[in-house]
Structures are given as structure tokens and as C-alpha cells.
Image 1 (tube, each protein chain N blue to C red):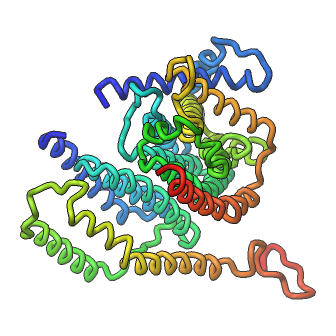
Image 2: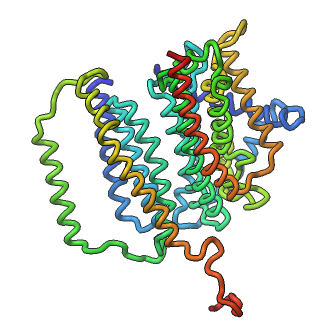
Image 3: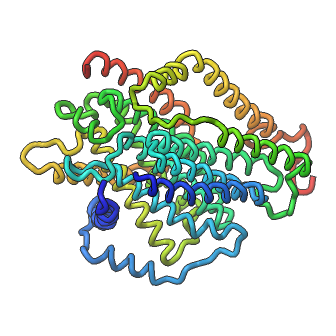
Length: 182
Length: 302
């Protein structure tokens, strides 16, 4: 793609990603928040494609769909107001968190602007690309696997804690009938 | 990929959906009528739209579009002939799996947006089912791509010039077929709509253009997964005498007919059983399939 084409795809997509990302925090419906986050991250995948990073873009589109759908599943399951219909406010410590967020965004923007990015485009067989591949599939794999197992245990543990007594609820004490109103 | 490609893929999607609409009565043992699909589609489109009066009603109208987009994107990655390949990306198989992954949020959005209890139940069933069946699809894709040493669908076709992958890796094929049948939410995996159980479930509220789009999207999905099954397992366009595109079309229609026929023969799988089959049988076997693919690649394909 030409430079102009890349720019024409990049900036509208980036703006769309920011807007959808912002609405994730504005909406109070868990289903909406999860689907908006999926939209934001899916648009990020399209940005990868616009920057000619085909494999990363497809992988981003594939992985984010699954992950955000899992998130919707869990948020609706665990939150007390999943539909956002009861006007429950789910934000806390607004002023301090806004301060931290603005400072962090400013810092990241400064890093992005001040870094001396390399101008050349690395080919598939460049030595640094190979080195990243060996790093990711070698030593770092242990920490990735550890993180993956931790997340899996957290998910299974969360479900175990949430569903007391199994699928049909807690058994009634002996000699008592369970019914409406108790 | 040229400027004509998107139009060619769209035309293929519509023509394929029409062909599948003719195939459905044929599989059921009735005589297909060439005008009947058009007539029933027009009848559906003429109905007035139904707008759910719920908070998330916009998701309800967005879902059929996303469903159709996912189907068309998946269809675009299928290589039909050495010349016409749609979008022949280097990582085309990943794009195929990625496009199918958007069927999951689309059907969930349909159920959640409708805001009726049975529709929401259908949507959540679907999420659970798809989370279980997404992994076998990705792992089987890897197993089939390994002998070719490439994620490009046309390279995977070329590596099967002697032995179709269904003979080389029968386990992978056996895991692939039910998983892609589930993605198309066709019987016996029609759990989100489950006519006799949830009364239409996720799609019960759809009328008019929305309903027509859902029907079209389901057939485009069936066409895409049949085409990809022919590509990955039945050696794609390879075949004697006939031109490549004809072989590919015949194989695709054969797979679609097999899927529709199985759907008529097998009763709907219960959701609990479908999930435990997926997690306890299909996922571990998919890992075995990857190991087999690795051994095959090491010993026979190099």
C-alpha cells in the first residue's frame, strides 16, 4: 500500500479505536462494554493490516474475538448489574485514577514521539526477527506458560467459588422443603 | 487480489447460497424448484422489520450484518482454482479461522439484543459451545498446515497433489467436520435457535430483511466451511479430466450435502453433552492430531 493509502486507513481507524475504547468505560452494560472492547481491539487488528503486518493483524482479529467473548461471558456471570439497567456506578476513586491515566498517557505519548525509531523495514530473515522468534519460543516461553496456567486457574477457581453447591444450588437442610419466599 | 475480487466473492456468496438452497430439498429427498428459494426470500424480505423495545436493541440489528460479513470474509479465503483465489493471503487459514471467530459475538449479539429470555439463553449456550469448539478448529488448522509448511490455502492444496489430507490425517478430518458444523449453527448443533426447545431462540424475533440476512449468512457460512473442508482435506482443485474450478465446486457441494444430510440424520446434541464432548474428547484429540501431523511432516513431507 502507498504511504497515502496507509495514512488514509490508519488515522480514521485509530480514531475509531479510541472512540470505541472510550465508550467501554462510559457504558455501564457489561455486554456492551465487552463488545465495544472487542470492536476496539478488532479495529486495532485492522490497523495492523493497514501497516502491512498481515499475520499479526489476522491473529489479533482471531484471538481478540475469542478473548473478548470470554470476557463478556464472565462479566455477565459475575457482575450484579450486567445489563446496566439499575444505574449502578462501577467507577471508584475518579479523580485519582483520572490523574494516573492522564500522566501515563502523556508519558507514553512522549516516549512515542521522542524515541528515535529505525527507518528501515526489516525483512523476514533479518537477524533481529530471528532473535525475537527464538526469544519468544525459548526462554520466555516458560513465563508465558506460567501466566497462561495462572489465568486458567483463576478462571476455574472463580467459577468454583461462584457456584456454591453445584449446578442445582445448595441442598436444603434435612427435613426442610425449599420453596418460594425463603 | 484485484479490484474485482470483492465483487467476485460477493457474487459467489449469493450464487452459492442459491445453490445450497436448492441442495437442501434435494438432500431431504424432495424435488428442488428453481424459483422457490427466490420466492421465499422475497416473502421474508417483504415482512416488516421487528424492533425489540430493549436497551440493547441496536445489537439486534447489527448482528445479521456481522454474521454475513464473517461468512463472506471466510468465503474470500477459499482458493477455488489456481487462477482465481479470492484473497490469497500468506496467512489465509488464520484469516479463515479469524472470520469464523466473529460468528460467535454475532449470534450472541442477536440473542442479547432481542432481550427475550429464550433468546438470551440461546446466546449464552452458543458462547459456551463456540468457546469449546474454537480450539479444535485452530489446532486442526495447524495440523493441516504443518505438512505444507505454509498457512496459505493454495500451498496446502498443492501439498495434497498425491494424497488428500483426509487420508493422511483422518483424525484431524474427523475433528474438523463437527467443529465447522457447529460454527454454522446447523443441526445437530443448532443449539442457539433449537426450534423444538427454545422456540427459535436467538433468531426467533427476526423478521423481514434481518431474517433474510440471517438465512443468507448461514448459507454463506455453510458454503465457506464446505469450501475450506474441500481445500484442506480433499485436495482442493486437484482431479483428473475436469477443469480445476469444477472439481473444487463438486467437492464443495459434496461436503455441503454431507453436512446437510448428517444434520437430518442425527438428533440435536444436548448442550451438556456437546460441551463435554468438546472439552473432554475433541480438545485432547486435537493435540494428538497435532503430534501426528508433526511426525508425518518429519518423516514423509520433507
